[in-house]
Structure formats: C-alpha cells, structure tokens
Length: 291
Image 1 (tube, rainbow, N blue to C red):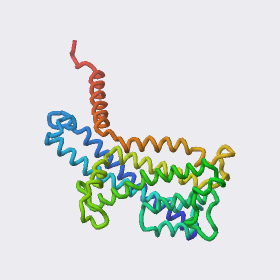
Image 2 (cartoon, rainbow, N blue to C red; image 1 turned 90 degrees about the vertical axis):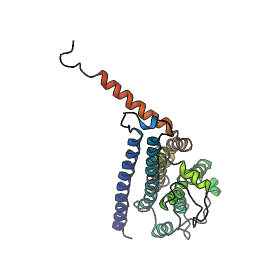
Image 3 (spheres, rainbow, N blue to C red; image 1 turned 120 degrees about the horizontal axis):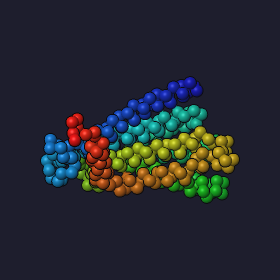
Image 4 (tube, rainbow, N blue to C red; image 1 turned 45 degrees about the horizontal axis):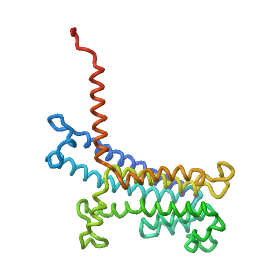
C-alpha cells in the first residue's frame, strides 16, 4: 500500500465514523426525549406508577432504542479500530493484514494494542512483525515496572469493558432484544446473557462510547509518538505523560457502567426541566393592564 492509499483509507474510515457518531447522537437524543415526555394531562410519563400502561409502553420504546444504541456503539468501536490501522506510518503492511484477518473483533483489539505497544517501545522482533512471541510481562528488566504495569492495566480494561459490548452487539444484531440465547447457534436460552443485555441503557452505552474513545486515544498516543522521540517533558511520551489522567477518566466511566443509576438520571432530567419552567414563569412580565 502506498502512502497515498494509506491516507485515503484513513479518510474512508474517518468518514464512516463521522456518520456513525451522528447516528449515535440522534438515537441518544430520541431516548432523552422519551425521558421528558408528558401525557395528555401534562404529567411526565416516567413519574407514573411502573404498572401504568403509558409508562410500560414508553419503557418498551426506550428499550428498543437502547438496543439500537448498543449496536451503533460497537460499530463505532469496530470502525475506530479500522481507522487506527491506517494511522500514518504506524503499522507495516504485514501487521495491518495480521490484525484485519484476525477473525474475532475481540482479538483484533487485543492484538492491535499489543502490537502498538511493541512498536512504541522497540520490542518488535525482526522475524515476528505480529509480536506473537513477545511477552510484555517478561520485559520488566527492559521497560521497568511502571510501563509493564500500565500495559497490563490497559489490557485489562480493554478485556473487561471494551470487549464485552461486542457480544451484546452480536445478540442485538441477531434480534435477541428481550431474550438472549447461547452462541454460536442460539439453540439454548441463556439467562446470563439475557441479564447482560437487559442492563444496557443510555448511561452504560454512552459510558462505553466515551471509554472506547479514551482507550483509542491512548493507543494512538503510543502509535504516533514512539520511544522518547516526542517526550513532552524530556522523559515521558504522551502515552506515559497523560496515562494517569486518561485512566481516571476511564475509571469514572467504568463506575457508571457498573452502577448506571438510570432512574436517578431520569428524575434529574425531569427536575431540571420543571425548575426551568418555574423559573421562566417568575420572569414573565405582568399582563397588560394589570395593577
């Protein structure tokens, strides 16, 4: 692949991501509009009793849109990885083909992260461009404990919070929006997978979206700024320099994934809307002719 082709492919995937983001934000807004919807009596439907038919119907619509949002979020993560493969002067053609031809999206992400880390810290063997023989945990004497620990932590975050959404997307794309079944042929019902699908909502999916972006940026920082060639303070690369800031951001999102507190979020939206309406009423001028 020529340099121009690499730039073209990056732009192709970048255009895909721009449209995916528009779709993601549009569906998010539709869900948020549902949260604030009122019935004919002017009452917020989400404040009604759980068994009320209007609320039941609205929650079904919310669930349907949440499933769509989950699918879009993983499309964003998948296309983001493809765009990463065409970052300027990062991967060799052999490395790019190795990642693209990896069957599972989960393995694509872990392979990509592993190879980028090896590239960044000059660990790529001459006869093994995919770094299959490189064990980062054995590099403490070369890299030091901090870098090896940072690799392990970020790898753990990818496996625990980025990758699980892929299996949820698979269920959603196969129409298993309420009841999910075991892979690979969906022959047996799975309560475990069903529970995971049920837990996905506006908060968890948005947090996964933000988390993927943060992980992506950390990988790009490694890919673009190798070794100490671009050290920000003469000692640390951007990946190292911003590591703790980015990890704090990621951990903030993981807390919301584990405990999304959707009901509190919805009530907060409604309370803000009610306070805003009350405030506007107090600012209205007196009616003409009033004493």
